[in-house]
Structures are given as structure tokens and as C-alpha cells.
Amino acid sequence: MIKRNWKIFFTLLSQAHDLAAIAAAGAVVFFLKGNSRIVFTTPHQNLFIGIAFFAVTYLVVASMLGLYRGSFHLRLRLQNLIWFRAFIISLLITLSLNSLSQTFVGERSVIAFALSLGLFLFLARWMVYRMNLTFQKMGLGIHNVLIAGNGAETERLIERFSIYPELGYSVKGIIVKEKSGRPTELPQYTREELSSVIGNEHIDRILVPTPDFSLNGHSYLQTLSEEYRINLKVISAEAEDILNISKIYDIGGITIVSPPRYHVEAAKKAMKRLFDIVGSIIALIILSPIFLVTILAIVVESGRPIFFFQRRTAMKNGKEFNFFKFRSMVNGAEELKRTLMKNNESDGALFKMKNDPRITRVGRIIRKSSIDELPQLLNVLKGDMSLVGPRPLPLADFNRAQETPSFWHAIKDRDSVKPGMTGLWQISGRSEIKFKEMILLDLYYVENYSLLFDLEILFETISVVLFRRGAY
Image 1: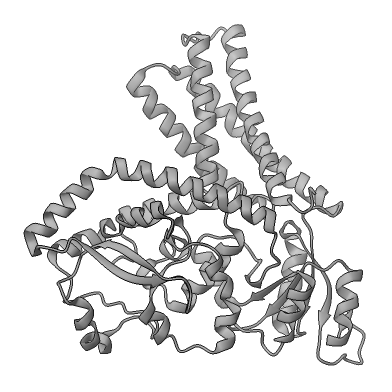
Image 2 (image 1 turned 45 degrees about the vertical axis):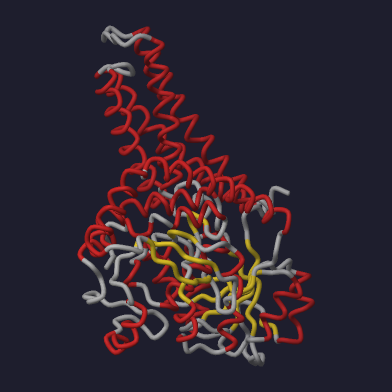
């Protein structure tokens, strides 16, 4: 059971180590307070409150920065960069609140706590990293994989898995169309041998290195993966570049076949729905003044309607719903769009235009600040959408996409999660992301979604909106 739920187990283990580090730093402060000649004026109770507040803040911030979700496969250097960011942010939040209330800690207590905590958190990350390598030797957190093809891309993958063992990939062989006569370091398997190899070697991943989003002549692997309930992943420079842009540090690639885990998926979807309901209600209450000001501005400039309704879906021929936005364009904008298609600045499946003449003055302001997206909270509350998920598109955008039937079949899992107000596409560039890039990001999210991942994306969305990256 631990092996099947390794990500959850290791996330809890990683969090426990950081809590132990914070507790140890707190113990140092209390020890110095009771035994040092240095005078610590802060009462015991206030010290405890301050340390407890910092602990909760740190766990939340570290989760939002992606430390725990990826700690089982991240390099130690990258883990240290993430925890240090979380440490600084959490300390600033704690000190800011303390400056308002003067309740938590004194100056000497802060210095003692910060210095000792930095050391203990560094040791905690080192221990977690070493424990991960030890667990991998026991077979925990390891993926047994086959790689399709024997070219340069395959050699690059094997070398990378060897250099970075924390990624957790054990290559059991190469899938080839015909075996070569010369000796090879790894065993080679033809299509006819795969059924027995998958069972004997306990294969749970098949990787297909390819320069683009395709199976590169290995389409039979999709049927085989579905039959044996193993993941089939496309590894490409394109996919890897996109994940790096999104600050997703994972060599796992883009999954196009993923075996269903019905009980786990049902629980995850129930938790996600509860999170959406609570989150959207709180957001609607907090943002209600912005709603009122925006409604008034739209009416004053261009009258009614206030809202823009459009039929959208997450997948071609998928479930449709009415998508809500504040109206940011002149009336009749959809009809004018046909005359502007020649000025499209995105690829054929999406229409994007920086200086779109249809946008009103109020519309430019609410688009730049993403206020026009806020009515989608009503979609979330209704159950049509989620706070985080794949980007829903107008039906016309899907119809304009010039893709093969095999492409639509390969990305069918994009429709297994509700469309989202935000997602990897938004924190990666929003309007600058093209159609196929957005699809790849959404497929990665569908396989890896969780409450921690949603919090991470929501946290990154805040900075994207504040600095208006990729919005027009």
C-alpha cells in the first residue's frame, strides 16, 4: 500500500521533518531563555504562540511553492532553494503580524530562532534526500520503465536517470522494432516480447522519446498500456521546455495513457469539489466590492449586458456549459471577430490579438487585472468549473484546430477533470501560450492534480495577476 501511495507517504514524511526542525529551533530558544546570560524578555506563552504561527505559515507557504509535492524526486540543491524561499516569506509574514500586535516575539528571540531554524531546516532537507535514496534501494518510489527506440534521445534519458537517481526511474530495457546483432548494455525487446517482459519486470511506465507530441511509430503501445494498466509517457524537448516554463521540475514527461484508480480518483474529486465550494464562496464574499464597482463601470461606459456568456468545453465534442465573464468588448464582438481573423497572433486554434479594437476602455482595465474572469466563481459554485483545471475553450476554437483524430484520442483524458479558472497555462504565460502547449500542460495537470498542486498553482496565479504577465 505504501508503494502505491508513495507520493502521499513521502509528502507527510517531508512535512514531519520540517515540523521537527521548527520544534528543535523553538527548543533552542527556550533553552537559551532559561540558561543564557542574554536577557530574553518575551514571555514563554508568547514565544510558543509565535513559533506555532510560524510553523503553520511555513507549511502552507512551502506547500504553495511546491516543496512537498515534489520532494521525492527533486535534487537537493533545488529543495534547498525552495525551502529557503519559504523560510524567508514565512519569517516576513510572522514579523509583519508581530509588528502590528507586539504579541509574539522579541528581537533576540527572532535572531536565535531564525539562525537555529535555518540550520535545522537544511539538515532536515538533507535527511529527507538521503532517506529517499535509501528507500529507493528498497524499491520504494522507483518506477520500472521501458524506453521505446534506441536513438540519441533514449541514450540521453538513460544518462539522466543515472546522474539523478532521486528521479526514481529504473530502466529495464529498450523497445526496438528489430534487435541489433551487437551486444548492448540494456536488453532489447521486440513488440512480440513485451507482454511477458511487463509482467516479469513489473513495468509501470513506458517512455517514448520523440521530438513532438506523438508515439513516433509506436502507436501499438497505447493499446498495450491500456491493457496492462501502465502509464505511457511522451518525453520530448518541447514537453520538457513547457514544464520548465511552468516551474514543474519533473522529467516524467506528458502522460497520454494513465491507468485509472477509481477509489483514489473518487476521493480526490470529492475533496477537490469541497475545496472549490468553500473557496468560491469565500472569494465571492471578499471580492463583492470589486464586483459592484466593475458592474457600475461597465453600465456607465457601454450599458448592458454586464456579463458575457459563451458556450465552452474542455474537449472537442465534450460537455458544454455557459461560461461567465464580465463583458469587456463592444456588443456584437463575436460577429466582428470574423473580420479580424486575419490579424490573429496565436496559432489556428486560438484567437489572440494584443490591440483588439473590440475591447472597451473598461474592458482593457479589467482584462489586464483579470477582473473580467471573476464571474467564473459562479461557474465553480454551480459545478461547471473548478478553481484549478484545464482551460475551457469556445467551441469554435476546437473546430479550428487542425489536428489528426489520433491527437484527439491521445488527449482524451483532458476531459476527466473539470475546467478551471486558472491552471498551468495561466502561470506559464496565459495569452502567450499556444494551443498545443496548453494541451500538454493540461495533460500534466490531469495526471498529477491534488490539493497541494492546486494551492501551488493558485499561489503562482496571484503573482501572474499582480504583475499582469501574459495578459491582454
